[in-house]
Amino acid sequence: MKAVFLSICGCLLLSGSLIAQIVDSTVCDILTNPQQLDGKLVRVKGTVIVGFDEFVVKDPSCGQSLNAVWLAYPEGSKMKAGPVAFLGLQLSKNNSAASATSQRVSVALDKNKDVKQFDSLLSTPYKGKGMCPGCVRYTVSATLIGRLDGVNEAGVKRDSSGRFISANGFGNLNQYKARIVLQSVSEVLQQEIDYSKTEAATKDDAQQEASAGDPVAAAHQVARAFEPGSEAGDQIEKAAAAYGKEGEDNGVQVGFGTLNELTKDDEAKSNHDSPDGLVFNCKFDMERLKGDGLTRAISHIGTHIADLRSKSSNMKSAYDAEYHAWQTTILSAIGGRQKTLVAPGGFLLWDSKWPADIRGKMIDESISNLLTKWLSIKN
Image 1 (cartoon, helix red, strand yellow):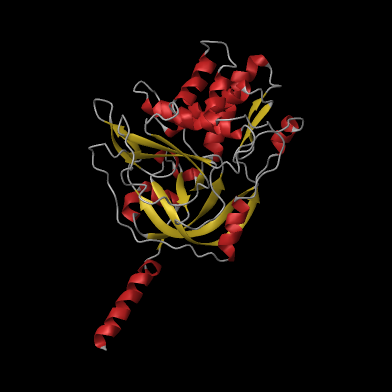
Image 2 (cartoon, helix red, strand yellow):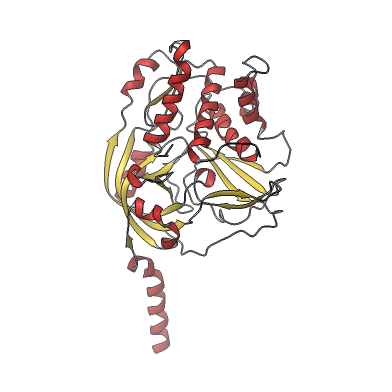
């Protein structure tokens, strides 16, 4: 009887260990030393945003290059809120470098009314005119409890030959040093995003019809809308070409569906090979990328792949990488003869009515505002 009693107590302690060890923290404290809290259950309050390639809790005051923590629901949660485009990076099966993996306690999501409200608000689409890929109506202030996964250095590294030897970090582009796998949510407060500044520009703009056939082929077609040899056309073409030819085993894996759950073994090596040792896991939510939105997303994510694979790339920061990808996305919209393009957060990235002599300045300012004010990326 004593042995049975001890066995039961042990199970209770194991199952309740996460609850007993909740650490109160902040976004800024986590980002200061994320590995110190790796595997621990944390309680954090902050502003949560969802958009094109983001699902994060952020705090612009942290003073980091990227002032946000990536969020994920546990595997199998079947929730709605999340990004519409995503690029995750893994070392390939044929890469001889060791992949650093951690054994962490699993987390189950408490699907109470607060979680359901949280998810509903962050998945409510913004229904404006024109194209606004990944745009939702609300941001949310909430208290989050979940398992913290942390590394002190995010991103990829190469050896002297240019082959990738490490891929650490979380979220889109593996550029986040920390991720919270959600267990519960409380104190949910909604804040409606102000899209009023874009409504005047988009009021006469209709949603573009979806391009027929393969969206990658559609991206190639958009590139041909520019003059042969033009910088704009070449930029879009490089993004489209990053996916390779049909049937080519080039390390780029494309999938479709909801992009908000923890992926099993995402920190381990991939089951696929790659010529340069890195597998690019591209995912798109086709339910929310309506019309030509999928073609724009293909161009955006393709730019990231092309930049990462280019040994001469000067993308040295998250800001540089995102700026270049959004620049390609805008060029894709122009090549697709869109009148306007709006980004999550209500940022007007492109308006065909802008005078020709200030278009470059307007595009630069709009991307910069999107990255610094919405994504909390430091320039």
